[in-house]
Length: 91
Image 1 (cartoon, rainbow, N blue to C red):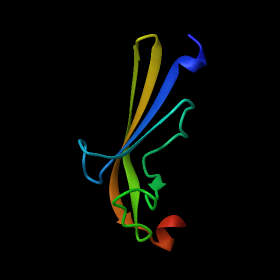
Image 2: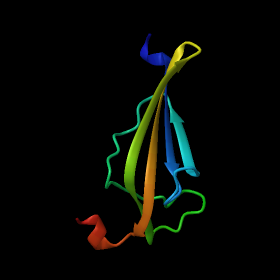
Image 3: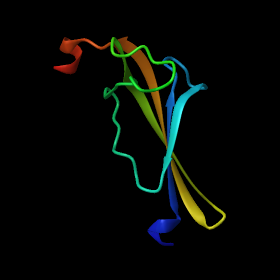
Image 4: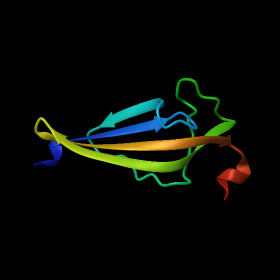
């Protein structure tokens, strides 16, 4: 199967939730790698409290499946909300 038959999905969940997606993205190229502890700035998302609040990734989950002749890779990011302080960004 060629790379043109792969879809990439990213779901970022509301802080403290394992059920409620805050924002999702879909692309034909892979998203960057995310790791536990990474900080996300949701400043341009609907419902954001940025720049004073940011998200820290608590866990990353991957799902890969094949259907209708293409492969899908979904990355789910589970988060907590933290103060977007200078000290946090310099750790």
